[in-house]
Amino acid sequence: MRRYETIVIVRPGAGETEFSSVSDKVTGTIEGFGGLIVRTDRWGLKKLAYPIKKEAQGDFLYIEYAGLPDGVKEMERLIRIDDRVLKFMTVKTQDVFTPDAPKPEGFTEPETSSAAEDDEASE
Image 1 (cartoon, rainbow, N blue to C red):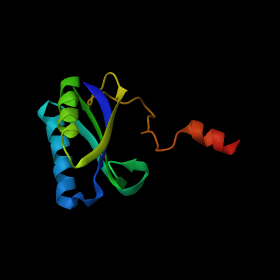
Image 2: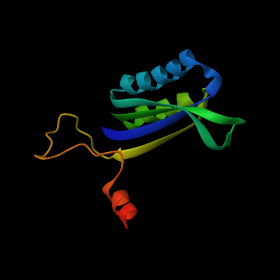
Image 3: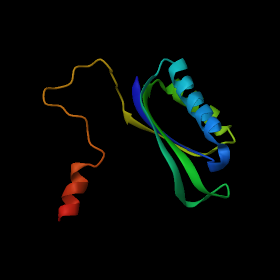
Image 4: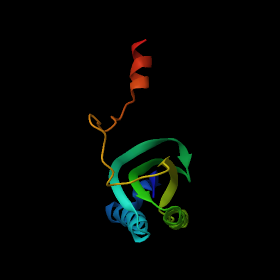
């Protein structure tokens, strides 16, 4: 299995039920192909940098998961044909993901800001 991150931008006027329907479709497809959802996060309504399909705002959904390439292809196909979705992007973050692998001693989960960004900010 590989580790991926997907960000989906849903139309702002879609409503709560439509947003949860898109979220359930994405997570259900990943799990249907034997994937594992690591984390889902709703970023909420945000202003877009430029209009997408004549929309100035979008409702953002972030999903971090592990799965097979076939599951990712099917999930992206379903998102692509959904009219409620403005835009999406999937990024592979790890080639090999083993959920039960022991973590090295002293290992901590990475923070949201990287140390390199902190070093550049202090200079």
